[in-house]
Image (cartoon, rainbow over all chains, first blue to last red; front, side):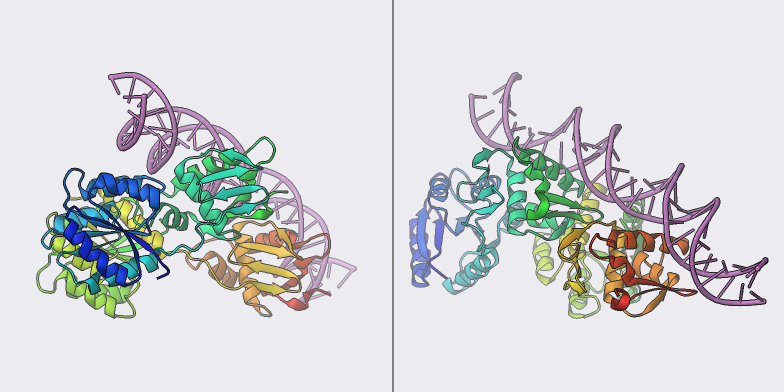
Length: 234
Length: 234
DNA sequence: AGTTGCTGTAACATAATCGTCACGAAAAAG
DNA sequence: CTTTTTCGTGACGATTATGTTACAGCAACT
C-alpha cells in the first residue's frame, strides 16, 4: 500500500483518533474532518485516495456529502466506505445507491476495516491517472482536467471528457455501446444505448477545431460500436 | 432485443402475467415458473438469458434457489434480478451478497424493470476478443475489429467482416452455402443461398488491393461452395 | 423566479448495408 | 457442339444503423 492517504470523516474525535491509529500502523497516511464542510474542503485540497464517511453527523448528513462528491468530477472517482450503525439498514442501501463503495457497521474491528479498505483500494487502482495523454497534437491532461488541441484549450462537458479520456487510454480497440456505458457511465446506471451516440456526436463536435478535425479520431464501427484510433487523421 | 429469453419466477400467477405482457411487448421471449422446483427444471432445460426471481416464495425461498444456481456450473453465469418487497432491505443485501446482479423493489414500473433488464443483459454480453489472424500479409484483428492488407486498413461491411473472420479461422476447408449461412448469419435466419454468393463477391472486391489481390484467397468449389486457402495467392 | 449548463430521450434525417433479382459468362454434362 | 447447370456481377428497393437536432428535466448558481 504505497503511502495511500485516507480521509476520516466523523464528528466524534475519539473515534477518529482510534481509526487513525490503526490505519497509520498499517502504513496509511491519514487526514481527519469533523463535519461535511470541513471534509469537502480537505477533499478538494488534498485528494485522498479513499474516504471513510460516518453516516450520522450534525448538519449535512453523510448522504448529502456523498451525493455532492459523486456529482463533482474531481471527487467522483474517490472511493467511499460508509460507517453506519448496526441497525441502519435503510441507510446502507441508500448509500450504496448513491455511490458508496462499501459499508462497515459500527462497532468494527480494525482488522475488518483494514480488509475492506484494501479491497476497495485494489478495485479502484487506476495506474493510468496522472500522466497526460497525447495523440497527434490532441492532449488530455487528467491533472488540470482539460483538453488541448494544438495547445488551444477545448471546451466540453464532463461526460464528453470522461468519454475522451477513456478512449485515449484505450486506443485501437472497438467498444460496444454497452461496454462504453459500463466503463464511462458506470455499470449500475440505467441509460439507453443510443445516448452513447449523442455523446459521441457532442464529443466529435467539440473536437472539431478550425485547424484540424480531431473528431475523426473517433471512428464508428458499424454494427458494433466505436473505436478511437490515431490513424483516423489522414 | 435479439430474441432473448427471460424466466419469470413468482408464485402469484397474476404478477407473472403482468410482467410477461410487458416483456413480450418489448420483444423478449418469456417463460414462467411458480416455485423454485419448477424454476430449477426450466433453467436446466431451457437456459434462459436472464432470471427474474421473486424473493418471497413458499417452500424453497428465492435465496436458496439463487444459492443453488450460483453453485452450479451450468447456471453460474445466468444473470439474476431479484424482486423484493419495498421494506425488505435486509434481504436485498443478502441477495447481492449471494450473487444476484440487481434488485427491483415491488411495486415497480415496467419502464424501470426494462431498464434494469437491459443494463444487466448488456453486461453479460459482448466482449469480443481473440487473437489476430494473419495469412500472407492479410491480417484480421478482432480487438480493433479491423482488417489490414500489408498494414493498410481495408473497409468492408459487417457481414463481410464476419465472413472473412470465419474463413480465416477455418481455412483449407470447403463450406456449402448452407453451412456458411448457419455459421456466419446464424442458424435461425432465412435468406436465399445465393445471397452468400453476393457477399463473397463483395468480400473479394474489398480484398482486392492495388498491390495484391487477396480476393483470390477465397476459392469457389463448384457444385459445393467456397473455401479459404492460403495457397490461393500464386 | 430566472438563468445557465448539462443530461438523457425521442424523433427525424441520412447513410450504409442487406437481400433479391436478372442476366451473362463459365463450366459441366450430354 | 449444344444444352444445362452453376456462378459472377451489377443494379435496385427495403431495411437497419447511425447522425443530428430538438426538447424537457434537473441541479447549481444569480
